[in-house]
Amino acid sequence: MLQGKSIVLGVSGGIAVYKAVELLRLLTKAGADVHVIMTKNACEFVAPLTFQTLSGHPVHTDLFSLSQEQEIDHISLADRADLFILAPATANLVGKISQGLADDLLTTSVMATKAPVLVAPAMNSNMYENPIYQRNQKTLVEFGYHVFEPVSGSLACGWEGLGKLPDPKDIFAAAEAVLTPKDLSGCHILVTAGPTREEIDPVRYISNYSSGKMGFAVAAAAQQRGAQVTLIAGPTNLTVPFGVHSVPVVSAEEMRSAVFDHLSDSDVVIKSAAVADYRPVDRSAQKMKKSATELTLNLEKNPDILAELGQQKEGRILIGFAAETERLLVHAAEKLQKKNLDLIVANDITREGAGFDVDTNIVKFLHADGRVEELELLSKSQVAQQLLARVGVLWKANSLSDDQ
Ligand code: PMT
Image (cartoon, rainbow, N blue to C red; front, side):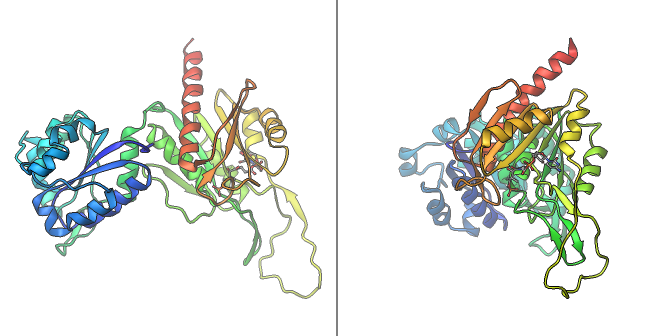
């Protein structure tokens, strides 16, 4: 989403400046071209050299610096930006912008830009709650600025409360969200992710290698595109994406119950979870002792959640995933048809960079109308964005046919 985008990162002076360094790292890692403007006070907290090294560009600090103006002036910075991010944004910075004041390079550039502006305030909690500050922040929101509210926690001043700069990963996700088309606004999407675990006894289970990365990326992308997202996830080590409602589950049975509990609200279901197909017939209440040299486990079939959904579709859009090791298209097409899906995402998990527990995937989209789209090696976030763009088209077409 941020690949090739031109971003101006405006840093004003507060203890949270160190977090802007991490934010810059995430932005450049995502392929964005980032130019940093620092206020004089920001330079007191972290030296511009740190930002310069990580961005690969000189840091802009002075409105009247001739050498800097020759390279790139504040108007061209403002002009070329796809997005401005102000992080951390102090009460002073928010106050100045909300009043239309432009007395340094950062405020001048913000005033001169037509790009969207994401403001991430950070300050002492009393300052944050001060009605004058709140009025200024509201003014920014009314003028279309995107304000990413601070979080609660212990503040550098020793206080506990609201005013902490959010985690750079969350600001990064908010930046992606600002630049993402909101083609799923008003759509309710249910996503399943991760593995399920089928307990044998209190210390052992049957499962698979799913990390949840693919499904969490789908949930994040859907949220960024404006959808209301419920994520039903088996056990993973991942952080729930910002703005996503999560329902943790363990077994396939629990996943099935959670899916049906949340189904009535959903316009779209995307099942990227790797559900265990079988579970032990009996779960031992105590740890099983190793006595015999061989052990036979009796397994029974788990419910096929997606197949059940396909039988009671009720106008919903159903998307499945297929992880295959051979005859990818044949097996995926069979599942598409048998489970009554609108689209299936087929991944050949034998290919390097595809499938379980990696950050990338190589997929094919098989549509119900027979079309097959082949995607190159992409990050799971990019695959998710590509998938959600197709979901947007399907959902729009569904809504139009409902209206007729
Ligand atoms: O989690 P990661 O490490 O990022 O890995 C991603 C992934 C490889 C798990 C993902 O990309 C993927 O392919 N998910 C589907 C895994 C799979 O093996 O599906 P399947 O072929 O068993 O099932 C086909 C579809 O039916 C899936 O959408 C599945 O969620 C669903 N299903 C399967 C069995 C079952 N009992 N209930 C189901 O709903």
